[in-house]
Length: 137
Image (cartoon, rainbow, N blue to C red; front, side, top):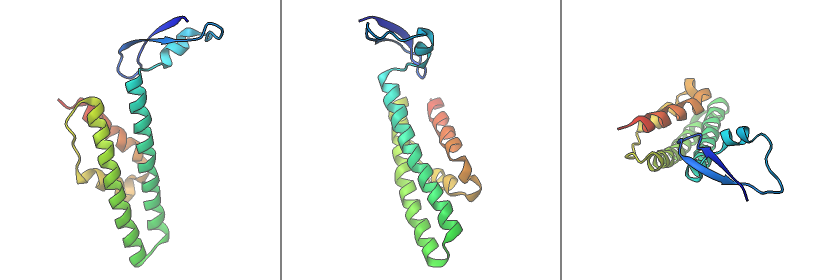
């Protein structure tokens, strides 16, 4: 089986991918530009999975604020805050493990996500947190 040399599109490490003789990919340069190493692929899959969970809870929070009143609203917001706290801790642990940095988690992360004016910017917030962890010394 032939091998295709590539550079991981995330960490820029060199690698080789094997492909079948009977089904060679067309336009090898396009395939080469999309490949990444297994650790980066696993990290991206986990990051996306946790990110979608966070987005769903932020959307649920918005719905609770829109449609619930009184005690129901406060109970729902409290439950969502608890779930966001747990999930953002998981996100922080994942980032720390991948980038080999100390795990940093702060209440402010959850507060930022729960801010009604920022509910449409969840992925942007997650990206900012990721870039800050990646740049840490």
